[in-house]
Length: 131
Image 1 (spheres, one colour):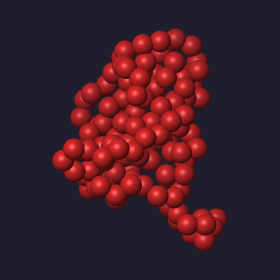
Image 2 (cartoon, helix red, strand yellow):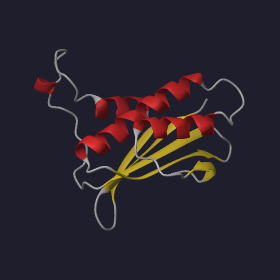
Image 3 (cartoon, helix red, strand yellow):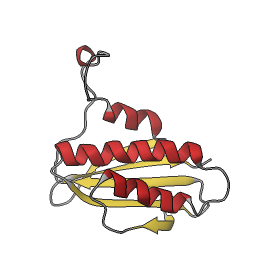
Image 4 (cartoon, one colour):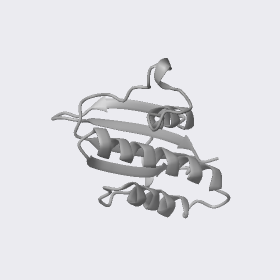
């Protein structure tokens, strides 16, 4: 993960709080950040929602901009060791409710890394280009 220049480290336990943190950071970037804002809000919403539904809750959240403000980094930690998985092809039908979050994250993020935490749980770290 790139080193932070501007960072948000207040407690985040809901998708709305995650989106607010991202908005706070991107408000500091000059120019039009609408495209990355939409993508970052969706990615953060999916990661936090998955942590709440499948991971035993959000145990950590960080978001920051690289020093040159060209990359937004988001990390969401949860209490579950199980890695996210894409649904099987037979479970991807248009009538299926839910089950698309991980696919959305992977399609929008420039990078996505899932790593185990030392005690228990995992950290999902993603980056999105700001420009």
